[in-house]
Length: 209
Ligand code: PRP
Ligand code: URA
Image 1 (cartoon, helix red, strand yellow):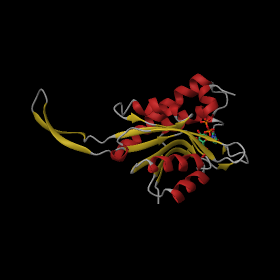
Image 2 (spheres, protein in one colour):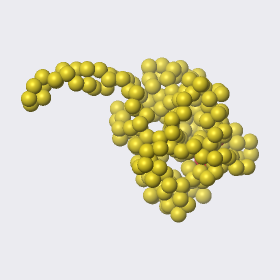
Image 3 (cartoon, protein in one colour):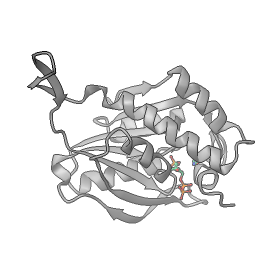
Image 4 (cartoon, protein in one colour):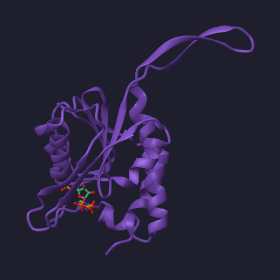
């Protein structure tokens, strides 16, 4: 069963409050999403493997640790996931970036894939899918299907706000994928929006609508 990690660090919660606030404009919204993505990346990389090497400090020879060359790929779900990519890259600058394009059909709320481009060495990489919202879970499940179909073996899912329905959907379809969120909200409304949520993440990030 997928594990669910809620990153309730005070800085993340503080910034998330202003991300949710409807009076926060596009520029500030974008900056805050970027900052929270960086803070979440710090937490999500906690289990990265390290190895010991020997170096010389100005004082002595010391055995000390470095990351042991894990290959990471970040995959935003288009569009809104793009807003989290640079924030994660600040901490993992050597990561490759793939893209999965999905939109929710407004009638059925089902995801429709319109684009997929991943790094060539899919099987060797640890993937972090990023998307601000996990609502019905349809987009996340479809994005994970898409990565697995192309050979991905190790996948984490990271979002700002999740609804319980979306968490359950990932757990049912992809029990091997752990979920990393900044807040677990109450529910979905009749239009598939997260309550209290933040509204339409793509529109708020890109100033559309
Ligand atoms: C939003 C969001 C997720 C999806 C979540 O994207 O960024 O990808 O909805 O909803 P779900 O869990 O019910 O599938 P949207 O489909 O609005 O597309 P956009 O990013 O292009 O605005
Ligand atoms: N997608 C969004 O952008 N917001 C929601 O609340 C649900 C899905």
